[in-house]
Image (cartoon, rainbow, N blue to C red; front, side, top):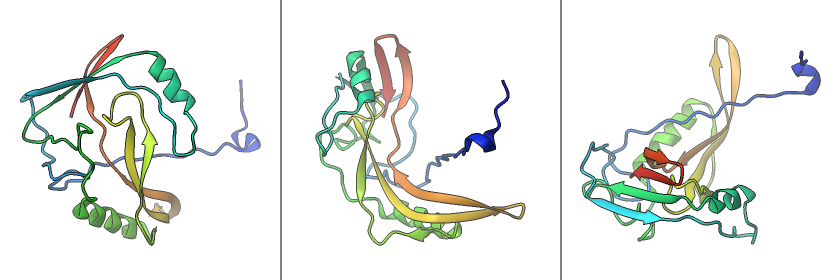
Length: 177
């Protein structure tokens, strides 16, 4: 089957993620060093769907919740705190991370937002202990030039890193914080 992509109006976007090399994590004072082994802490959760601020329930969250997967988190005592375990409110946004993101935004000719607001994106696959990911828009409407062609950059955001899968079974997933 041949498809005329211009005729159907196809537009393709690309989302690029990059981990920042900061001294501390985005919402707590824990160091960002990855530690192999050293998983002294283990706790279990079963995530379920919840209503958004608008009183709506995400259909994808309902779908994932019906699986009743057991989510097992492993953490070490050096690089993990109660914030990551969702047992303590997040701390202030890491200033170093904001400065790095703003520098990158300016290098891409983006326009920084007047105020940075932390938003929540629902994530119910277990990769975040909270069931959502904290994210903030840093800048809008940037562009980079590649081989003489301007590539638009719609949004530059800063968001917390998800946990890493270390083991996956049909009804159980293990994550490393």
